[in-house]
Length: 379
Image: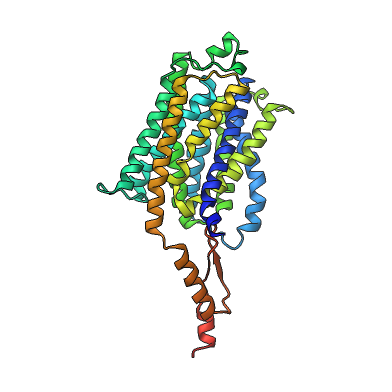
């Protein structure tokens, strides 16, 4: 049981990346059909708000703190960073290039997150003589380097039978447009920096506003409002861009709202409470590998040796970062056995406790209300 509790954060992080991979494929299909990226952002977060808000009202009732001006401002900034800036830059970059290209460049997120966490919030410990600190730095560099190799070094094409059906136009859209690649690449890198900033600020906000579901609902709601204003301005009041039918556009908006902006944000919030923002973003390379494989089947995107080589480098960097983070986690947290023994001792001493605190990933139960039993039984 305890071994399963240990791997819960890893399984949750992998599932979140699977959710993002599905979003990338569907979003590229919708954008290819002419859907406005600004409208997609609004519909995505509107759906997420509708889905998440009822659960937040029910399940966060006892843990949701009072809303203050400082917390509200943080949530406003979170919505601006992730919903308005990051999501729009992500979709715009995907319009100019491919899903694989943009996803590969978003592997700079762990590097930005590690840097921001170390400089601003000091949640990452860096020791010059520490091997695990070296592993995190080298792993981050390898992750970025692998993304660059995968993007820039095409190399010889790997013959795949299912990509031979690609037309000349489709092949041209797979990254041969230099100007489009540069423009889309710059947008993707800028968006990844905003997403890394969002992850850091989300981790900080959860310390004063620990209701993860409520925070997700607020971010999606405010993001919908802000995104609507941006969409109205950028689309210049065109009513036709808001039309949606029973097609890929509706499926993309629904999937992205329920899975990506709703469920995935909530899962990431739970992981960050236990492992921190760098642990969450360190899994982003997995999404790139999944998208690269799926895009070769669905969009007939051709695979090149450079992309495969870059993916292998990224995976190596991922393991180095996770190894360094695992050492940090073990050195900063008491052992599982110590937590269990402490819990049992408290339970024996105060059997009539009123408050129970359950850790999401460890499953350890610890009594919080000690005074009541002590007052009733002073001896």
